[in-house]
Length: 75
Image (cartoon, rainbow, N blue to C red; front, side):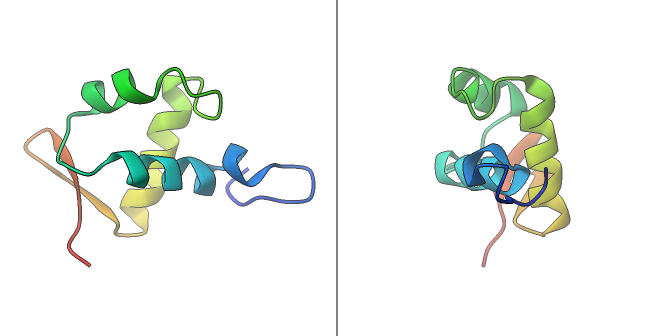
């Protein structure tokens, strides 16, 4: 479920959801703002999957939480 396989579409994996999040996260946003933008995407579908995608990005060092706001880290 984290990585795509021959049975899991790349966009349905957590890595794919993370890519969608990074694509949408151009400016710093709260989790609520991000959820409002992404809730209608069939790949995300639930708040749990959005949070798991954010968790994966955080563990990879690609996003950070600062004062309740999520932003991309400087690369």
